[in-house]
Length: 279
Image (cartoon, rainbow, N blue to C red; front, side, top):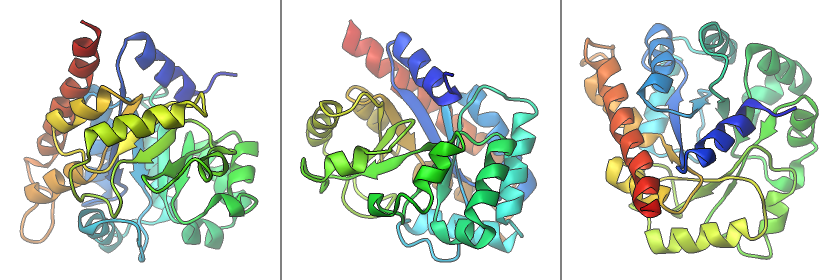
C-alpha cells in the first residue's frame, strides 16, 4: 500500500517541484497555539510536517530549537501531549504526512512497542531519531518499519561513499541531507556542494532527498529546491515564532501570521525554483 509520505513526494514530483518540509516544536509556545500553528501549515504551503518532541538534552539542535523545546517543556508539553496534538491535527487533515523528530530517550522510557503503537494510531507517518546510528537499528528502526512507520535517516557532508550505503540501509520515506556541518540554524549552505552531494546520494537510492539546515527565506529555499526533492525549514520558523512572543514567551496576536507568512514565502520560493529550472 502506498503511504501518505510516498503519495506526497510523488505528487510534488508530478508537479515538477520540490516538497516543502516544515519543522515546529510540539507545545511551543503552548499546546493550544502549537496546534493552531501546525493546523495552519498545510494551507500556508507545507507538504510534510515535522514535529519536534521536546527533550531536556537536545544535543544536535541549535540555540533556536533548544529554546523552543524549553518553552514547550515549561508549558507542560510531554510525549503524551505530543501524540494528542497529532490526533487533534488528524481530525481535520488525513493527507499531510507527519514526522516526529527527536531523541531516543523519551521513546525508550515510554517503551518502544507502546510508543510505536500509539504513534501509528495517532496518525504519525515517520520518525527521525537523531541519536540512533544505523548500527543500532534493532532498537527502534526495524520495529518502526515493522509497525508501518517510515524511519528517516540523516546524511551529512561527512557521509562519504563508504558510509552512505550503511546510512541508506533501512531508511524509509526520504533521506534528510544536512547541508552544513554543525548544529541547526547555522551558516548558509554552499549550493554547488549540496547539488553534488544530492547527485551522489541519488546514484545510490530511489528515495527522495530532502535538504535542510541553513534555510532562512524564499531565496535560500529556492536555491536548494533546484537540486533536491525536498527542502526542510525549521530554525527560521522557530525564530519567527519567538520574535512574535511577549516578554513572558506567551503567544500574541501576531504569532500565527508570523509563522504562516514565512512558510508561504518559502513555499513560493520552493515552487518557483522548479518552474524556473524547467523553463
